[in-house]
Every structure is written in structure tokens, then in C-alpha cells.
Length: 355
Ligand SMILES: Cc1ncc(COP(=O)(O)O)c(C=O)c1O
Image (tube, rainbow, N blue to C red; front, side, top):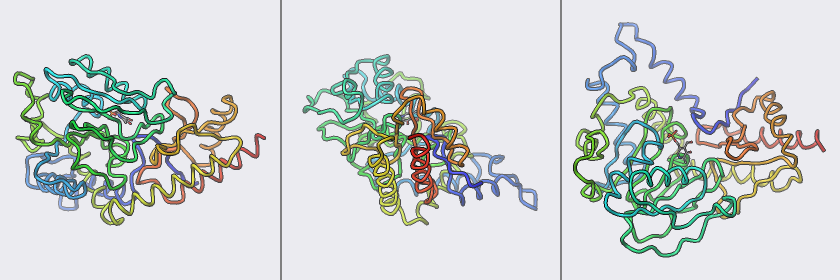
């Protein structure tokens, strides 16, 4: 049976990348070691690292005013690392559109002074909250580009006259994006850029000057900028996979092509949900996520039977996050083109069988 993987992350890899990964783990006939068994300081891996950084810079449309850092620790570490570095002695502003923004704010509060300047919590995170103009003394405005659990996505970065700091974990490289307008952004690789173990950070170079002295070296972004992200041993396999994913993105036609495809197929899924009396999605149309679509059966007791029936039909990873319940389809770049059609057929059949 053909499997369609709707997992929210770690998520599906493009099939050609999976094949390259399998090949790359084989030592070759002449006995040279596989990509996971070579020094990160040797010529072979240096070539991978250089190409990875160059391709990321070009895909993101970044010039010399931004630094790209390849780090460990996932987005969760950035929740603390960012305020430690960029909000020292100042207040940081957070706009909350779901679970991940709440977590980011909670960590920022542990590291210094941070406040929620707008929040969609009271409405149940189904829309973008209004954002009043912010005074210039805030260090940055943090927002979650795409809330992976609640399925709420900013169509474009919010307006603010202070540096924007974006958690782009679940929408990184899924569409053309004005990366160069951001002061700071971060994303784990395990959704659209390969496998877990690599976190991409972009930071505007002038913001590096705001970092206080005396931080642990590891937790100072300048350490990573000065060492081309090789301060310690990187997760070499994740870097290798990320490079293969970038080559694949280019082969697919780039971010404009992927972005158009992603929004068309998400649109088909939302239309099927909206046209049904059984399935529903509560998020306002202006900010529905193109990457993660949460949806609910009319009777919550049917959630788990639906997840089980979907698995039997080869549709896996559809169980919603425990914080929200229901089901969730993650439609990352690597999802097969006909996965959404299969899901829509399944939703119709399940509805018919239960009504
Ligand atoms: C928007 C968002 N932020 C943060 C995280 C946490 O990422 P990590 O597991 O890389 O720390 C996730 C994970 O799903 C996410 O979707």
C-alpha cells in the first residue's frame, strides 16, 4: 500500500533526497567512508558546508547585511538564546498566535523582560490579533510565522518599526518570503529542510553589536558567526540532508513554484473541509495555514476512529497535537502531490460512513 506521510515533524523527505541519503551512507567500493563518518573539518565536508550556506543565502535572497548561522538545539533553544543575546537590558515584544508563541514568551521572561503586546488567546487562536504601533524602546517584535498546532499563519510579516524576530520553523522555505526584511529568524530543519539536528538562524549583522559581553561562548551568536557555524562538531548528517533538500528545491523550480503548489493544494483541502457538514476548521480565512491544517469531526468521539481509519488507508501522521486535539494534516514541501487528493477522498468516505 502506498503511504502518505502528513506528519508535523520530523516530516516526509522528498523521495530523491531519501535515496541520496541511503546512497551516501554506503561506504564506496574503494572503501572511502560514508558521509556520516568523515571529519567536519576535512575538505569533503567543508565543500558540503560551503555549498549549503551559499544555497541558503541565495534561496532566501539575503545580502551581506545578514549572517546565516547553522546551530544545534532546535527552535526551543532559540526561545531562550534570542532574548539572552538581543534583549539584554531592554524589553522584548511578543505577539501570540498560538502554542509556540506562548512557549517563546515564557522562555523570554525567564531570560529578562518580555511582554505580550497582542494575543489571539482569548478568541482561541483562530485569528491574527490587532497589533498597535509599538514604542521604539522594545528590542524586537517576535512573531510565529506559522503556528504549527493552531494552523494560523501570517500571510506576510507584521508591520513594526522595530526589528522583527520570527519563528519560521514550520514554514521555512515553503514560499517566497521577505527574509531580508527580518532582523532575526529561526527554523528547525525537520519540516521543510530535511532531518532533525540542524537549526537555521538568520541575524542582521548590526544586531550582533547589541549582544552583551560575558555570555557563555556557546550561547553568543558572535561565536558562531566568527566560526562559520563550526564552533563545535555539527550534526553532519543533517547538514548533508539539508544540502540535498536545497538542490531538490531548486530542481523543482524554486520557492515561487513550491509556494504556488503549496497554496493550491491547501486551498483544495480547506474547500473540502468547508463544504462538509461533518468536518470543520475554525481559523479565519485570512490567516489559515498553508502548511498545517487542523480539522475536527462533528463529534469529538470520532477523532481517534478517524485517525485509525486513515492509517489503514495509508494516510499517516494525522493525529492532532495533544494541546488542541482533532486531526491535523501537515502539507510540507516534500508531501507527494496526490496526497491531498487521497486525503480529501478519505474525508468524504469517512463522513459518508458516519452520517
Ligand atoms: C512553530 C514552531 N516553533 C517551535 C517548534 C519547536 O521546535 P524544536 O523541536 O525544533 O525545538 C516547533 C515544532 O514543531 C514549531 O512548529
